[in-house]
Image 1 (cartoon, rainbow, N blue to C red):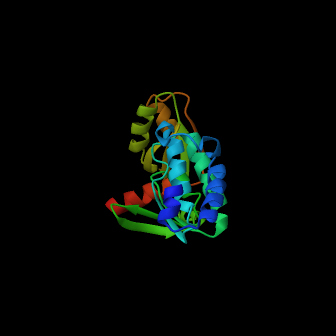
Image 2: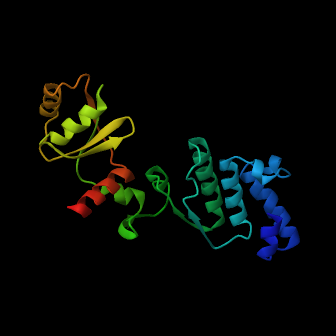
Image 3: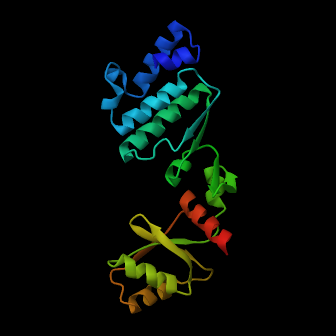
Length: 210
């Protein structure tokens, strides 16, 4: 932190005060005298971000800052970003995690360096007009194949513990359930879900290749 402050010409008194504030915010103050090589991956990432804020930049670019970081550290990291945003710094983040994209004020979805859409998370998810069913059964692999074969399903993909089935117009829950049972799927459960940023990304990718 000291070296970074000197390189960016942060005054001596300011960089010491700022370093303490940031290290406490990023929960590293108690480890301030430890060697960085002894830090975990998440701690090293937090230190990198704290260092980036030291000279109070007008805009900060973060390239996949949580890649390789555990889920708890990811959550903590975004809570810290939310606090730092109050300082009026513009933060531009690239991330492969769609749940993180939904935490941003503005989102740009890209693939292979090409922009597919932009907007607030709400604007993007509200642009998804089809019904999505979250479907689950005992044999998820077979279920995925059978949903793909249904003439009522427009698209299907794995989504956490479920498969997300994008339904065509005038579909019937009853006929879909009967179709799946006829294929040998047991204990099938399904319910509609609100589209997420990831659902929108999958639809944009599908439309791009059609």
